[in-house]
Length: 272
Image 1 (cartoon, rainbow, N blue to C red):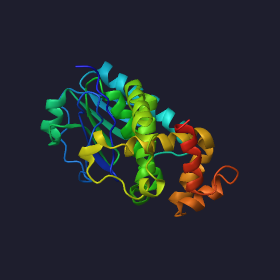
Image 2: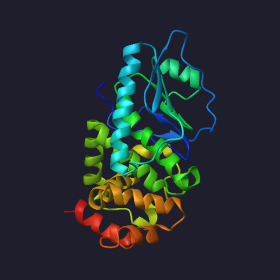
Image 3: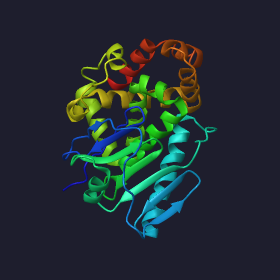
Image 4: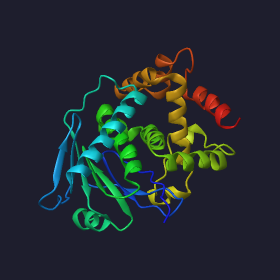
């Protein structure tokens, strides 16, 4: 089997990710806030870093995954401009031996490829692990920085940032989403009024829905065009309760004053 694409999602503060069919992205379902998972078998190893506590079945694996987590964390913080944000506590990352152990100990369905609860990531070893980490970690950071209620209310931006960071961390994801934007989004963009208010209800249909490709493209456009520092200010204003247009005007006065301005500028880029 060729390496699958693994876009993964987080709803509010928890989610699980499916293992996609070849060439198709993953789906997710919401899970309880408290994690009922069972840990690794006795003898597992733990690697502690500045921001993570990673558990795996060998010291080399734990160290390797911890390094991958820190690498993604650094890039995410730089891209989102959250240079001074410090998580309340280290994120816990559990990497099961394989899909069978993951499903047996988490109770997740056969299609699930990963899950996030609170400040923990539940994963299993495999070729798609890097993409999973890139996407889910973005949700963990976004949710904690914004506050869970704000993160849930801005799902288009939450998912968009996660898709963008997944693409930045994984070449297969970058290729998939680039192709999806060119083939399905650019010819017929979703109006932003729909994109921001009508997020897909059936996550299992993600592989046929261009919404995810579009929000990832939009988030990446805003970060690249407006700069990471401005993006962090934009998030801060949203976190503090500002409406999207007001946050845009206060942050990007010389560039965009409302979301419709972003929409026009973004369309010029993707349709040229």
